[in-house]
Length: 372
Image (cartoon, rainbow, N blue to C red; front, side, top):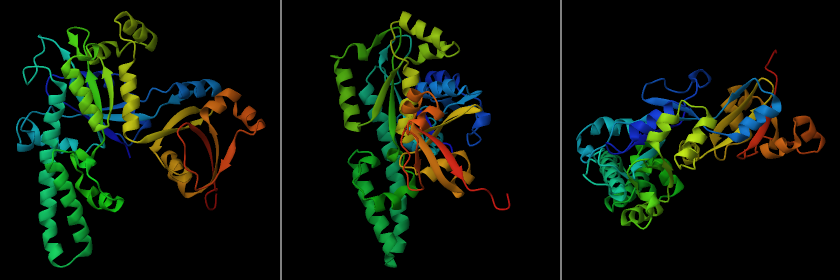
């Protein structure tokens, strides 16, 4: 199953520009049958120097990165929860994604109007959060109303659900996101069915510009301080991106892109940082397989066991799992080859209970099929 991040933001913050920059870096879809083929969906490879080095070590004919799926979601305006603008369409689309990339404009440019008339990133975040919270309040209240009948029949599960949804309602009405509610693991499981918008992880993309004034370059500006305070309160990751520049550079090779960024005084690959942060926001880790045919990065949930990781490759690797040979990618690269790593005793054997670690290189051993 593919995991996706919805790109959201107010109009004219650079949301579509960022999406275009990302999708011009997208990878061919044939290796990822789970991904939706749609103009508003981009399948983007996660930049991974370790994978490149493994491919070089193994002289692999093909290098296949882990991917993140980005979805361009209709712009949000104040009143979306009541159906203003493309509100209903926005809310329907955002329910389908696993996490959110919230694009926030941090540049002033008189040629690009702001929907609120002036730049204030903290206010913009509050606007979108308010709309998402309103939508979640409506969802929670519908759930509470539906549970009333079951409670009258003294249904124990209904009572537990009702109590959990009441906690969520109180949290939302206090202006906080559902993710900030204090729920037990059991309560989280019982309310997962609601797919609350403010329960989704959020990554903030702070969009800067080569022209005009960027707030992150004026850190004493009260608006920047207010933004940092908001992000700290959220406990969310954030990345500064130059969406306009990245859209222009997307078709160039990596060396030319780096050279032009340096020329413009942009030191970081914001787009690469954003893609990596998106993968982390989804709470995924990466393990590798490498050989002459291909070197490939596989994305699995944090905490996955060896058989569960094997299922990412093929269901047989889960169902017929015997053991896995495991070595950390950096140790393998230092050794120079599998053979050298084995000679040094660096490759270990792990069983079904092994929890895969970020950066593992794995070789799966499975039972032969019946009659095979």
